[in-house]
Length: 68
Image (tube, rainbow, N blue to C red; front, side, top):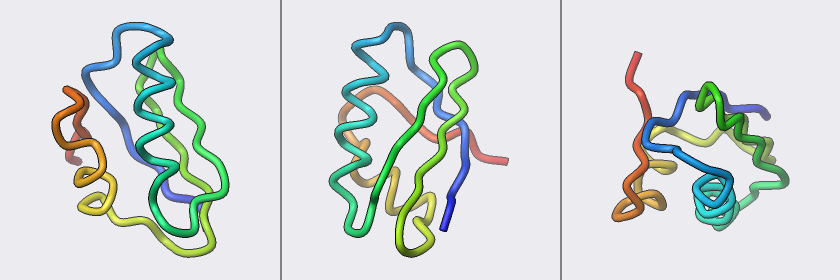
């Protein structure tokens, strides 16, 4: 399954790496793709990842999900 959302707070490639590492901690995640310029994030996992799940692992990092 692919879950897509937008992240805010990303300012550099180090931010992208940190956010990716945190999101990769979620159970079942196979790949995380984050575009620095737009904040567009794609998580490929064996099940759907909810915004709440993603926000929990990003807590304290300075990055947050843009709510639609």
